[in-house]
Image 1 (cartoon, rainbow, N blue to C red):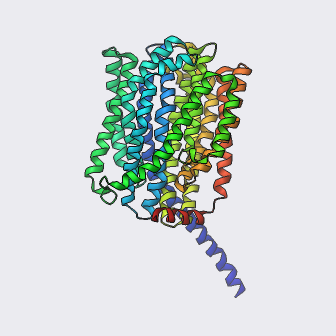
Image 2 (image 1 turned 90 degrees about the vertical axis):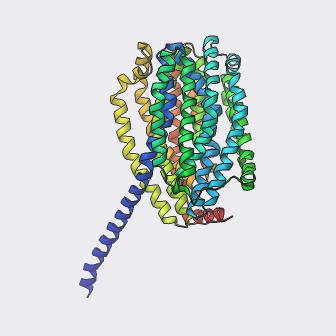
Image 3 (image 1 turned 60 degrees about the vertical axis):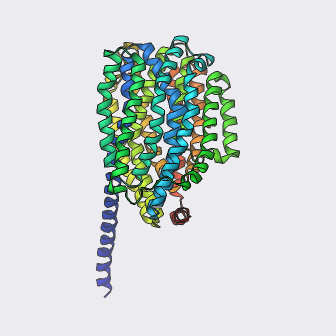
Length: 509
């Protein structure tokens, strides 16, 4: 009998292992079915800005520098605030409500986000109108400031559709309705490329045409998605009419949006005005966020990272060779951000799966989703970094014909490879944070990694040790590295049963 038992036990263990492996592979397929098309969606949307800046760059180094600074400033003060700020809150609210089968709440939350984001667009637009004067006050080159200000004004028509677009994207992604977004985004990109070429080169609109095309393309994307949401039977359960509940929810969104906007704008002005006191500013900034945690609860931690990168694009204008440093850093950031949308899409898949499973009360499934998406991201990181390193000699030519710029970009490529690997893992874990509803933890982790470590190191290497753009990149790369380590610890120590209970309570309110 004992011999029979010994023979049976290994077979049972084998069956358990095979069962767990099949379950893991099944979860990877679920995550992949969301992440793969979402990569196309997010990359296509971001490529609108990349294509416009690339075409502007072929007009000359000044055109590239002015477009880069304008793009950096508008990303910090507007686009990142909308995409990674309040719109990111819908991943928690809509995702968990959908998992708990509170379908009508998705429509209410989405309307609230649209109203709130459109309100935020008004003061942002006013700020962009005076960008040229602000850049002059901050010590930027007069010619670059003038052209950057003009570029920002022509970007204002892109801000309002972007607010609507980001809300609709979160509304659909939390229901795993990725295909309509994919089709609309790809169609918009194919519309954008020839239109941008015509406005920039044929109609001789230059940088203004490149910026205007972005707005026209975003409006097209919103219109296409709007028709889908209005008439598709796939969203019949979650589609709702505009009601008083929308305004009640809007009050909560606005309460978090206003201090977030103030925080970002103050940071830009102070840091770029006097970089020598940058460390003091960020120390005070960290203290402020520590004592007023509501400022960061609804800020995705990607926002804080993106702002730190964009701020260094502005600071590069204070270097001895501002045209070269600004151009190369903007190419580095554009390339890193373009790749970032791939792991960010994995993070979106993680957010969707985790929020849905927690809302449904399935903590084990949520935990399994985390491991599945990390495995997929590790595979992608290996392929992407190896490809980028092999193509380092031609990367700069996509943005500029200037040999000095191309050679500088080639030298920066190895640092870029390291940066994207670290950034990829933190992007996935950030998605887990959004799905779980602990964005505030992720924001504080990001705050410590970037604003207390990475940025001071980057300032030391770039300005004090005179390493320029290389010093900036090396210093900033320490940020995602520390962030990955800390978020890994937080995720590994998470009580998923408790998170599931909290999610159910939130969705049933």
